[in-house]
Length: 296
Image 1 (cartoon, rainbow, N blue to C red):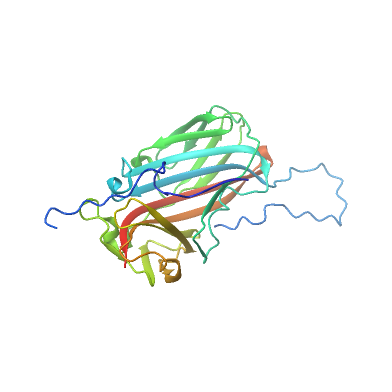
Image 2: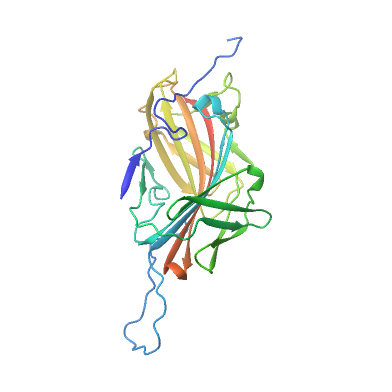
């Protein structure tokens, strides 16, 4: 498997720093077993049926909202993108990098399965309840679409059509958040950002709505007080239950008043059987918001 470490979770380069401008007056469906269990004790003389096993495709529908883009070197507040990858079946998962629910890590490692890509056509068509879009080929077996936030149909059933196969498959999109607290993580002006106190001895985050079958994940990246050096990061997961307490033992190693970039994300992973590829499509719905604070 190919792998790399997350260095800066909201930037594409290593030379981007978080920035604070002083004021003038001063966020899985279980996919562990993908093989159909056949009863070998009975002799079956009928024609063999297609066996659905392994992962043969990946679709990722991702929305990210950054409260203060200038604070983290981003040039836009909202990003909505749709990505696919189709390949020969593998026993590896595209989302295996998400920590097990109820665990934390300070060594978050994103892994990508090594696969043999399949050509499913130059375009992938996606039809939602209100909006439709086309993902164009970025390489053999890979497709990409950039969307506006207004095109994202929340909690909606989407039908996916591949040009080289007559059969379709469906995935269900997710929704975001009405609120996440502490609310001052989401100040948009760099002069007032990094105001939220993230307690080093343990920090509780709350959000709504909640109750999906997905996973909620909080990742905190710590920087020195000037924002020029990444000190480290830690990530924790919980059920989508509306609250999570981030353990203090993952934060106390950072100095007080370190700047923090906080990622809060909902992940929903579902395995969808797709007969033409004799395998499952791994559907990964991802909704992330990015805020700022300091470690206290």
